[in-house]
Length: 227
Figure 1 (tube, rainbow, N blue to C red):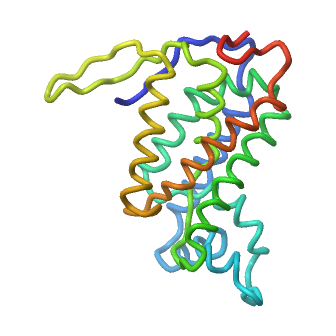
Figure 2 (figure 1 turned 180 degrees about the vertical axis):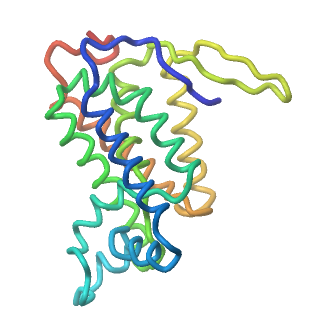
């Protein structure tokens, strides 16, 4: 199933969510303008490489501190499907979480979710030299928060029944529950990372930020009932 949009109005326009999408798209367009070698160097400089994070002593000659790649890696993407899927989920679910936390707190919530997810992936794969990129970890945290705050919100979803495709309204608890189950099973089967996907980052971001949303949300926003 592929979510298309939710039926869960916000109190005001999601400025931060929209800005994050623009920033991710701008960085991706910049990536497309680079030649092959320049693109490789760009990724090497700003992607998260787990082995570098835990190396002692730290590698010399880095463009930025290796800890900073926990953040910069969130804004890099490996292709149109990668960024398209991530930005779709961020637009559908991020606006309501921004509404629930307030704009400034949403910035911190989003970044913390991404950092925790990236660190979890790096810790489990601490000898890996494979770069990790993408906003998936941060967005996983947004999805976890949405599940707690708006489990009964309706999500218009594209559902496939063999060759038959239709849109149906599905409660968020089922859409996001299915998404999390898929990430968890994929992590178990693959050992955490396969096909270029950091499954454990998704799982860790989702769970960690379910726990974090409490102190970040506004007092008028209730668990399970929204506003």
